[in-house]
Length: 116
Image (cartoon, rainbow, N blue to C red; front, side, top):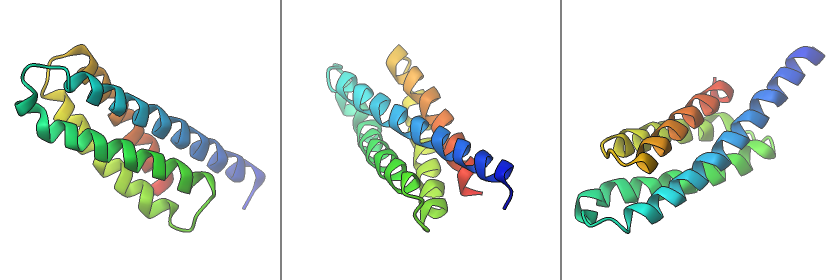
C-alpha cells in the first residue's frame, strides 16, 4: 500500500468519524425537539429511528477509529440506518428535522466511502 493511499484512507476514516459524531449529535437534538411537539404520536417512528441512528453512529465512530476488521460492515449498516433516519426526518417540515435529514445523508455518504 502506498503512502498516498494510506493517507487517503486515513482522511476518509477521519471524515467518517467526524460525520458520525455530528450525526449522532443532530439526532439527539432532533429527538429532544420532536419530544416537545404537540403531534408527538405522529413522530414515534421518527423518534425511534433517531435514537437508533444516534447509537449506531457513535458505535461506528468508535469502531472506525480503532480500525476494527468489522469497520466496513459496520459502516455499511450505519449508512443504511442514516438513510432511513433521513427519510423519517424529511417527512416533517420543521427546520430541525430537515437539517437532521441532511446531516444523516452526509453521514451515510461518509460511511459508504470507507465501507466500499
